Amino acid sequence: MIKTIIVDDEITSRETIKYLIAEYFSHIEISAEAESVDEAVNVITRYKPDLVFMDIEIKGGTGIQVLKQLNNHDFKLIFITAFNDFAIKAIKFSAIDYILKPINEFEFQSGVERAIAAINKQNNRASTDSLVVNIESLKDKKLALRTSQEIHLVNFNDIVHCESDNAYTTFYLNTGEKIMVSKGIGEYAELLSEYGFIRPHQSHLVNIEYIKKLDKSEGGYIVLKDKTQIPISGRRRQQLIDILNRM
Image (cartoon, rainbow, N blue to C red; front, side):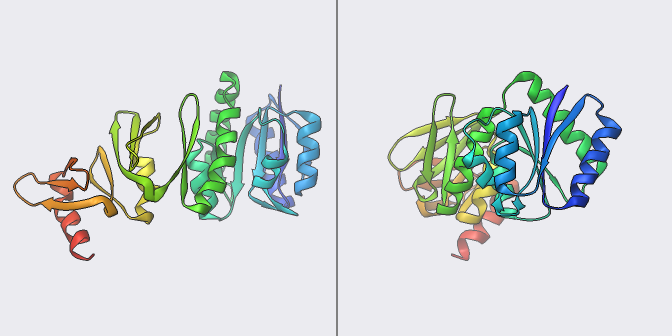
């Protein structure tokens, strides 16, 4: 049996989760429920669950505060939330599932099935640890880049450009340092677009602050201040020119 805890201060939400578990997942056992930060910390510590459903905003604080108070994150986490775009960004970049309220039964089934697969692989701690770092770092315009050995906290302004190679992305910093992470560039483009980054090519992401010039000849490319040349794809060329003309 998979031991589960539900953390939510809305009784209707807890009842919906319990109903869907009973309906579709007979091998999941609900060990306890909680509706506040203190209760959540106590029951998670006591029952050592395999899976936790947690609302982002609960009585006494947030689900993030619960995670900070726990010494052990060795469980699969699924956030249940009605809002809070900022937290969702951190959740997505930490490879943690979330389900939006009102809960859709098909999304719920899919999320729980992914959770069960992750539990079977026993790879839960790294994602949850990464979330705790990401949720704090994004507030200060920093990005937590997790490699196989380390977590690097990088200021957005220190990132010159990023380059992807299939499922890997390399970050080039203004110090000359390079950091490679096992995450596609598309996810970072979504986050960093709000902080002065543009995507001239599907494999490249560039900090506007480090652009020296744009060559508009056929094909075209961007020249960075360190003389690096970044290609521009044909379908993004005019969009990029328009963005730079507005600066």
